[in-house]
Amino acid sequence: MTSALNGPLEVGVRVLAVLTAAFPTRLDLNRLVLLDYGLLHSADLGGPQSLHPPLPMRTGEFGVKRERIQEGLEVLVRADLAHMEPSATGIHFWASERANGFVRLLETEYARGLSERAGWVVDHFDDISDAELREAMRSVFGHWAEEFEHVNPPVSEMS
Image 1 (tube, rainbow, N blue to C red):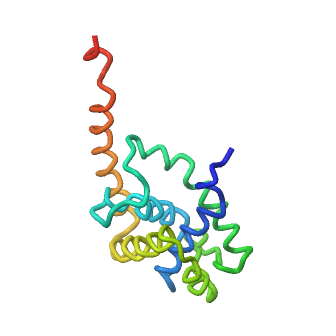
Image 2 (cartoon, one colour):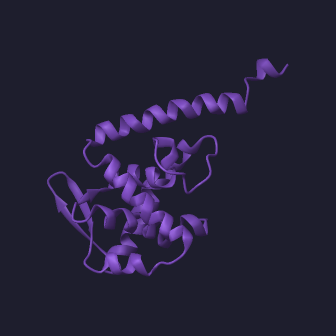
Image 3 (cartoon, rainbow, N blue to C red):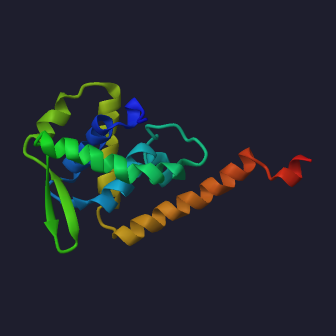
């Protein structure tokens, strides 16, 4: 069962915020997965306060994120808010001409936070390669492992 907060519509809105901030750049699914993480957990990467709480073991999100983003992209393409095009390096997505107007219609505090952080994550990681972006994520994952060890000490320490 999919949570309402991680369903195709909610994830689609997050991805649309990223695509709109990146316009006219075309992004592939791998980059969108990484940028979506940065959008939600921006403080982990040295950015503004995160939209989602800093729970231990956030890396588990990556296990389902790719599929959820694919579902969200399907919604966006069907609604003509995003376009997709296959290329020699994979399938790329970009915001349609209608996307910016749609994003501006979203007036909740959360939606404004999404747009602000989408702008930050796109600007912050615009000039680095996917490999460099993955490395930035790996450095955060190492920090989480240390945090998790403090939350859940080894069984030998609990005896």
